[in-house]
Length: 115
Length: 115
Length: 115
Ligand SMILES: Nc1ncnc2c1ncn2[C@@H]1O[C@H](COP(=O)(O)OP(=O)(O)OP(=O)(O)O)[C@@H](O)[C@H]1O
Ligand SMILES: Nc1ncnc2c1ncn2[C@@H]1O[C@H](COP(=O)(O)OP(=O)(O)OP(=O)(O)O)[C@@H](O)[C@H]1O
Ligand SMILES: Nc1ncnc2c1ncn2[C@@H]1O[C@H](COP(=O)(O)OP(=O)(O)OP(=O)(O)O)[C@@H](O)[C@H]1O
Ligand SMILES: [Mg+2]
Ligand SMILES: [Mg+2]
Ligand SMILES: [Mg+2]
Image 1 (cartoon, rainbow over the protein chains, first blue to last red):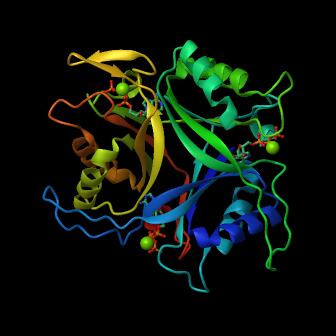
Image 2 (cartoon, each protein chain N blue to C red):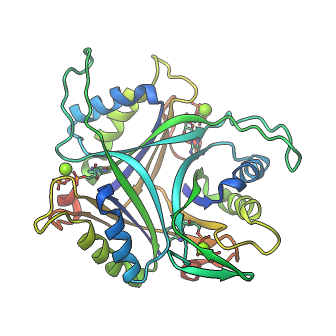
Image 3 (tube, rainbow over the protein chains, first blue to last red):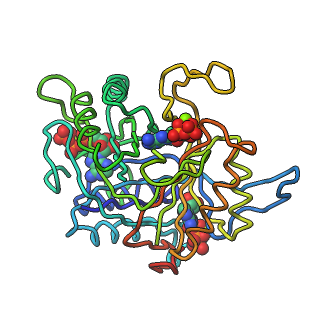
C-alpha cells in the first residue's frame, strides 16, 4: 500500500484526473496549496525588514494505491501533469511513501481491499 | 511514532474530535480538502471537451500518535466517523504511516516525548 | 529521500522561509491548516494568563530533502519557528518520514536528483 502525492499546476488538474480515471484510479484527495520550487523566491532582507516569498498556487493530490498499481498511477500523473512537449518549470513534483495500514471507514475493510 | 491520517465527512468532525479527546488525543492538524472515492466522478469526455469531476469537501485530520496508541486512535476515529449504523458511501478513509522523527518546536524534545 | 513536515505559527512563516533559503532550501509546499496541540480544547494557563485553545490557524510546510541535508533543514526550521528565547506554547511540531521515490514532473528525473 502506497501513498502517491503529486503537487501539480492547477491548470493540469482536470487532465490529471481524467488520465487517472482512465487508468482506473477514481479515489483521490486534493488540497489547494502554495508552492515554490528550485527557483525559489527572492530574499529581499533576512532578519531585516522585508522578505518576499514567491509562492504560487498549486494542487496537492494524494492517492492511496495498491503496490502493483503504483507505476500505472505515476505514468498517468506524469504524462498529464507535464505542460507542453518538454514540460515547463514549475510543472510539479511527485513522491511515493509506503503505508502500514489503510481502512475504509464505512466497512472497516483494511489493506488493499480498503482502497 | 506513527502518523494517522483520516479523511472524513465535515459533518463528523466534531464527533471525531470529541471521541479522540475522550480517548486522550488532543493534538491534531485539520485541513479542508476536496475528495472523491471509489464512486469517482463521471467522465464526460477525455481529451475531448467537457470533463466533470465530482469532488466533495472533506476534512483531512492528521494525528501524531505513539506506536502503542495507534489502535486506540483508530478505534475512536472509525467509530465516530461512521454515519449511521451501517455507514454510508463517502464516510472516509484512514491510513497509517511510520515516522522517523518527531520534534516539539518549543522544547526541542524528540521522539514520543515530542507528541 | 525524506519528507520533512512542519506545522508552525503563521507569524513565523517568513522567518522560517528565510532561514531555509539561507540554508539552501528553496523548494517547499505550504498549506493553511487548523491545529490543536497538547493543550487541546481545555483552558490552560501559561505565564499567568488564561489560555483557551480550540483550533488555531497554522501553516503546514512540506519539504522534500536529501538524506544528508535533513539535519540542516531541521535546524533551520526549529531555530526560526521558535517564538522568543524559550519558545511558546503552540510553536509547532516537526516530523520526518522516509520516501520511496521522488520525481520531477518536467524532466522525469527521479531520486535525490529530482529534489
Ligand atoms: N523540495 C521541495 N519540497 C516540497 N515541495 C516542493 C519541493 N520542490 C518543489 N515542491 C513543490 O512542487 C511545486 C512545483 O515545483 P517545481 O516543479 O517548480 O519543482 P522544481 O524542482 O523547481 O522543478 P522545475 O525545475 O521543473 O521547476 C512547488 O511549487 C512546490 O509546491
Ligand atoms: N484512493 C484514494 N486515495 C486518496 N484519497 C482517497 C481515496 N479514496 C478515497 N479517498 C478520500 O476519502 C474520501 C472518502 O472516500 P470514500 O469514503 O468515498 O471511499 P470509498 O473507498 O469510495 O468508500 P465508500 O464505498 O464507503 O464510499 C474521498 O472523498 C477522498 O478524499
Ligand atoms: N499530536 C499531534 N498530531 C498532529 N498534529 C499536531 C499534534 N500536536 C500538535 N500538532 C500540530 O502542531 C500545532 C502546534 O502544536 P503545539 O506546538 O501546541 O504542540 P504541543 O505538543 O502542544 O507543544 P507546546 O506544549 O509547546 O504547545 C498544532 O496546532 C497542530 O496543528
Ligand atoms: Mg521550479
Ligand atoms: Mg466512496
Ligand atoms: Mg500546544
